[in-house]
Structures are given as C-alpha cells and as structure tokens.
Amino acid sequence: MVQRILQPGEIEGLDHNAIPRLLLPQPDSLFKARALRLRELAQGKIKGIPVDAGMQGYLVLMAALADAQAAVVGKLAPGAVPAADPDALRRAMQHRMPVLPVNGARPPVLRDIFASLLDELAATAASQPALSGGLTQVLAQLRALDAPDLDACADAVLDENGDNLNPMHAPFVAAALQILWSVSASELRAARVPDLETGTLCPVCGSHPVASVIRIGGQSQGYRYLHCGICESEWHMVRVKCSTCEQNGKIAYQGLDAADAKPFDPVTAKDDKLPNKANDPKKVARAETCDDCHSYRKVFNQEHDYNVEPLADDLASLMLDLLVGEAGYQRASGNPLLWMGRSEGSEGQQA
Ligand SMILES: [Zn+2]
Ligand SMILES: [Zn+2]
Image 1 (cartoon, rainbow, N blue to C red):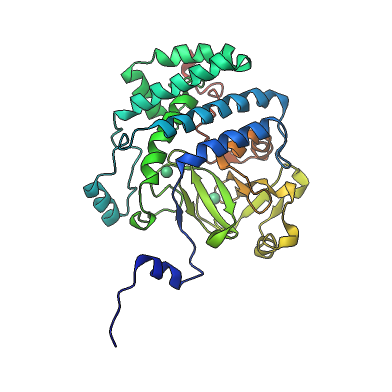
Image 2 (cartoon, rainbow, N blue to C red; image 1 turned 180 degrees about the horizontal axis):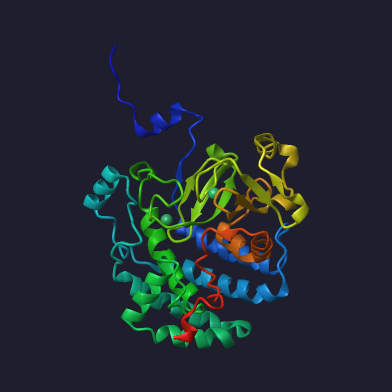
C-alpha cells in the first residue's frame, strides 16, 4: 500500500471527539462583543446577573474602554505588533513554556497603543457628556505618565501587585496590554502552542485566568475553558478539577442564590448538558469553590446564556464575590479591569 501523508485538516477531521484544547482570541470581534455585553449588564438586561445601581456607572465606563480597544485594534497598521520570534517559539515548544510570556520584554509599540487608546477615549468623553466628567480627569492623569511610570504600572498589573498602583489607572494600562497581547496571540497557530506543566496558567502568555467559561457550539460542546485576562486566549480544563490547585475532590458551586449551593456531583454536571435544562438564569454565573485550597473562581455558562463574556460578566457579578468571600473563600486571581484598594493594614500607611 502507498502510504499517504495526511494534511493538517484531515488529521483534525479524523477524531470527531477531539476537544479543541486552545481557543486563540479574535480581537476584531472580542472587544466589540465585550462592550455590548457590558452595556447590557449595566442596563440590567442579563437574567442571572443582576447589577446594582452602584456598579452601573463603572460598567458603562468599562464599555467605553472596550469600545476604544476595538477602535485601536481596527486601526493598527499591519505588522505594527511584531510577530513572535521563531527562535523563542521553538524554545517555548521544547521546554513547554508560554510562547508569548508576559514577563518577557514588552515591545515599544505598547506606548503607541496606550496613546491611541487615550485618544479614542478622549473622543468618547467629548461626545458623551454623561461620561466626560470623571473620564476627562483620569485621561489627563494617564497622559502625564512618562515611560518609566507606564512600565511600572504595566509591571504591577501583570504581577497583580496592587501596592504601587493607582486603581483608577490600572484598568487603562491593562486594556493596552490586552490589545498588544491579544493581537499577538491571534497570529499564533494553536498547534504550535505547547501545553504547560500546569493547567492553571495561560499556555500562551503565562497569566492567571480571570474566570472559567462553559462553551457550546461545534466541538466545544459543554466543555470548560479558562479565560486569560491578558492575551484573551481560552484553554481547556476538565470540569471536575479545581482551576487553582487541580484537585478534584472538594469542588462545589455557589450561585447568587445561596440556597443553590451544592456539592459537585458528576451526575448533575452531566445533567447540565441536557437541552431541557438550558437557559436557566441561576446557572449563568456561579462560583466554583474548592475546599482543598479554599479558593474560588467564577464560571459562566454559555448553555444558559449564549452571550456570556468572562471578563464583563465577572466584573458585573461582584455580588457573587461578596457572597463567596463571606463563606470564607479567597478569590483565586483578579480581573484586570477592576482594582480594589488595598485592605486596611496591608498598605504602607504607617511608614
Ligand atoms: Zn494569556
Ligand atoms: Zn483548589
């Protein structure tokens, strides 16, 4: 028999049960979808994620930021974001390391992206009186950041180190990092991105996930992905594992209604996939808690709301953080668009 070499498309077609392990971002549509979702959340249109009045203004501001990100992505000149270095890609593959590590060098184009982002936001502030007050003020401060300031802020954002960070500046610097990293990530080929030793960090950039999302459609039916807060990639992790410590014995789900909390049960998890259980608002946003490491991370379920958006939904469901925090669980990692002030006693006030 003549041996025939299969083409990549044919190889993927051979195994219909293969789970896509990595979903690379599509920045052209991602930021637009996020802006839309943030506005709908702010307007109280999303069943399952009620938003209190105090949060509405912030969500509208973050929607303007996501719009500005979309505009900047749309105007990027071809090749403005340098392609990943082939040698670095090879080394990453060899040693199972992130291919676009956030702790590596930051290309100088970040400064241009940041400046363009501020220009877009200034135009928004000029045309939307409701936003202009606070936004104009923070834009003036952001424009005054020099290169070392911007670098220091980017370092703090990437290290999730709130100590030296102005919580009002951080989301804007994070937004510029998201543009740069998501555009770079979108140019990769998933097959050339190795799995890391740990399943809890982004295989593309090495950041922590913001939240989990249960995806439907195509081969992703009912599978859980972790969503990266910086490069916006999503990677697969089985549903029964804790996304922080990778243990699987003591997982439970907590909804916004405390009475819904129940221990993880593989039967119920399968039951979630039945079509007659779809579109249950109580299951759109839940926290997955782990009694091995006492952390939690939220999980948003596309089976119950097709348009779930991990970053936006995480931001809007602060109420769930409060509930789970009161129950004694620590949030596993932050949301780059929201920075709380340091808790009392932990900052250098006394120094
Ligand atoms: Zn990433
Ligand atoms: Zn755990």
